[in-house]
Length: 447
Image 1: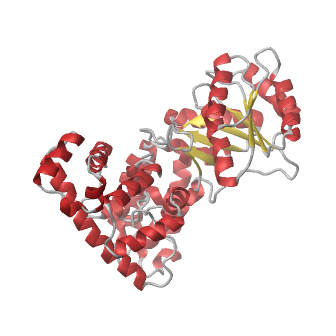
Image 2 (image 1 turned 90 degrees about the horizontal axis):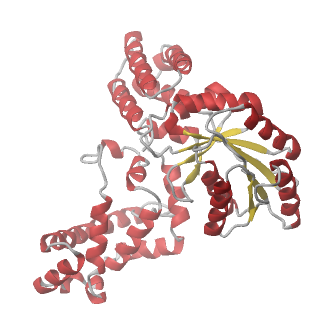
Image 3 (image 1 turned 90 degrees about the vertical axis):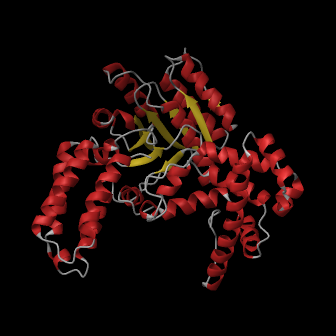
């Protein structure tokens, strides 16, 4: 997960102050020093860190903490508030033009993932907002960029407007917008050229396209793994193009996360989206308050529910809940659930969204072994239909056959059967408790 190092450091620091009945100025001073070091190590801009620490100190030794019943918790709330404010305060939504199509220019340096992000954004607009996007290939210097966008268009079953490499980007953009009007597209996503570094020719071309099409949004795509360089690139592009927002890619990598915490403060332009993986559905809207909550180990239930709702059919969820309650939950149901949960993204990331999961016994720094999940799937798939419906028929010879068919051993098969029975009992207890509560509503697929 992104911010892992920063997250661990801040959580350790916050833990020291949480339970305090009284918080002295010295406590705040020590906490501020540790927070400052954690942020600098995460590659956050030093001016941004200085201002951030000053804000915390000022508020943490003020009346709102001194008059609070739980001063330690109040200090953590201040850190969370300031972290949220640092990343933009609230979500910055994508523009929608009153006279379609809405035109979005995608800009950035070569290698930041601009073309792929253009495809991901088109996918998100269609899936989440039911819009009809048009992809436009305006990188005339790299034939591979046009081919890449066409490949993405095929994968997404989405049209790509291109005129090859002999027509200017300005002309391509203008013609694409006319085409989009005729074909009733809601959004036009213009994939522009990038360079390995910021240069005058690139900026002039982008300025010409901007002037010609007057885009509703200019999104700068930057690679979060480049750390402080990402902030410098954002500053450069913003000075010359007056961008509307930033899309941070590779936020799933081994990055220190400083770019995400510095960009808004340095450019005063919001982070609009974050890339959380390589797949075409791994682009998310950026919510500063949710990210601050995750960094401080408080989970992110809203994002978890949104992922679940996008993946799970509500009628199926209700049917499953009834099966859990009546103990008629089978290995077939279990297999289906595993598939749905895995569609929601890497399991380590899902775990980070559950409040307090990192504090639960055995869950701290838990590494979820995807290979082990693959073995579980193989064992279940090696069972017959009858065995999946009624595991009680599985005797010693059946266990040997299942182990052989799944490339595992009998003890692994025994362990899964035992865990499955224990899980069924626990599920029954949980669903009965849930039934006792008012409402019920939508359930997460692993509840």
